[in-house]
Image (cartoon, rainbow, N blue to C red; front, side):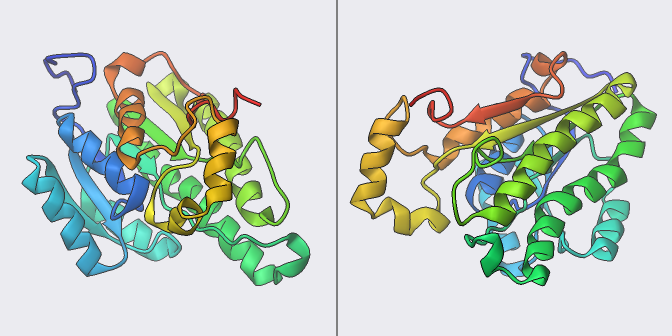
Length: 254
């Protein structure tokens, strides 16, 4: 599709699917893509939260529609993508975390985290890629974490899944590049989202971030959106297989 564009970050005429788009960083990414002109399919499982997220994006002037499915259920995912029509931009944002060491986890819990955080993005990419190949254009953006290249005790499954998701990003970039599709990832650092409310209230965590990050603070959730808009846009057309850390300098600072 050839569309006249007002600026290099213009996403007019593109359709984006954002999994986990009802809250937190996923919602900010969905809102940012809509603000850049994309039609955004917001994914979530809960109908009420999904309706609220779509309504807020629309109230801000964006084009958003609900796309309800459970990313952990392949049949639901397949049906939803089939009904959605052409998808130009996929953001694999859904994920869960279980802060336990390997020896403290049941095998079923380990499998569940890896299935949702790693296997589901691979399967969803597999569903949207044929259409992107047919159109000769596409963007796949995986939301990894600074817990991919770094690790800490007591976070085995999440670190493993996010490290694997970074590797999947490189592998898909190699597989799909010849078809005009770029595959990149965003690795968020410490963001002031609802799941982190407990840590945000902890003086020790705040002191740690003040000395450990270059910017010395938590990231505001809306600060994630620009990286996704950039990677989805024509401006990033020659970038693929890359993991962009959005972490206030955490990985660069010690």
